[in-house]
Image 1 (cartoon, each protein chain N blue to C red):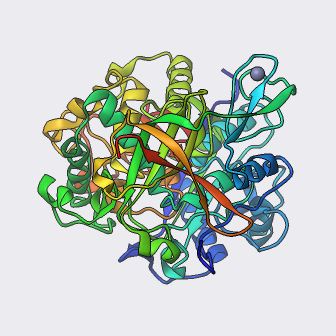
Image 2 (cartoon, helix red, strand yellow):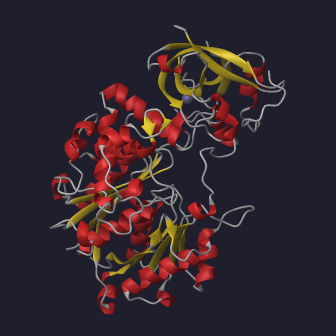
Image 3 (spheres, each protein chain N blue to C red):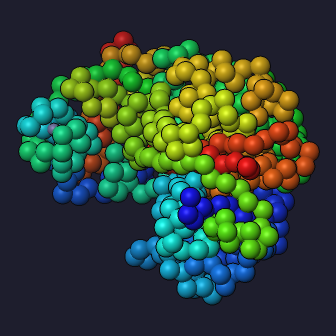
Length: 388
Length: 138
Ligand SMILES: [Zn+2]
């Protein structure tokens, strides 16, 4: 192959109680995350010629130009920019888009950045967006956003397949088990199925411990060519396959509430590109905005059949020591969830593939699948990574 | 009808005005594609099934069944706090499309997927009527 795009740097900012240590404006925290990832890659900021930014932030007024705003702030003049925002899956899509741009020679060093200080700014509510355009048919009914849409999907999944609240709780408990091994995780105390079942009801059948955290967070990823990586002495993570799709924005327009169509489409393409089957995947990092997100994603990715997700996650199968290691940093449920979480899935997968995950390191990881989900089960993007 | 209605009100635009105007007249009006014959909701300029622009408005039966539902135990912001617990449901209309709405019932615990429902118009302001649903078994 000619130019091979690889991941060479990852970085994130330390959190304390879900807040970024040292605080800072949305631009400051993204700059610090970018520097951390570039230092990790041993590549200078001045070499960055591709910038990929999706955020929930922006200067109020017409249009949001996050890559343009952040490029100026970082003191760079990118010749490739991508502000694709498909929700929390945006960063998996950014890896795909950067890989294509690098392999075509459209840029040489791509920087993917995300930051949020939503917790510190107390900017998150269940109220959702103004009832304008398509949202005029959603938000007049008082649906708690975004949990209500996920609750509708969970209820439908239970109806069609007999999935239980206890099975959803298995995911929250297993993920907390991983968080206990991650010093950076926000919630580290062990929990039980009963704790999840007895947690505060939010939007039936989802309860507080079925829901992701609300935290700050910032992370960044650096990609370049394999040749450039070797020249800088960077540690290489290979990108074997990718795919993306989105199907709806309003929950009322989701094609089938019991099936995650976007993840089916995205992962099918990623597996085809990688030329591998599910047996080759040693580790899965998948978006866990809510427990039901994980269950439906596992089915859609093809690790089990439609409707069998509940049985698949039972018996703490995805917990530390279980046979299906997943969401090994503690996930959005227990590590952090700064609005859009997808970049942290990628960062964790790279650390596991490098053997840098400390107490939570999974043994013999060669191939990892990362899957982001955005919106209200709206978008999906899959990336398959390998360390050889 | 309350004097002050503080919940979110739709920002009605030319593409959605026929729906909301009909609701004020207590009609549930939805678009139907003359090309493929299928209905859709919410209203669009092009049929989402076949992408034809040959769309007409028809009065729906106002009947359907519960496709899914959730009981809000926490409100979607302070303006809904007094309503907790309340039901948000996705109704599969007999004409085919699904629509999000509320189910008005004295017992939120009795709602089940598959329940038959009928539209009931809630005149929340002189200008705005919300098509909500009741359970036929209620
Ligand atoms: Zn049509």
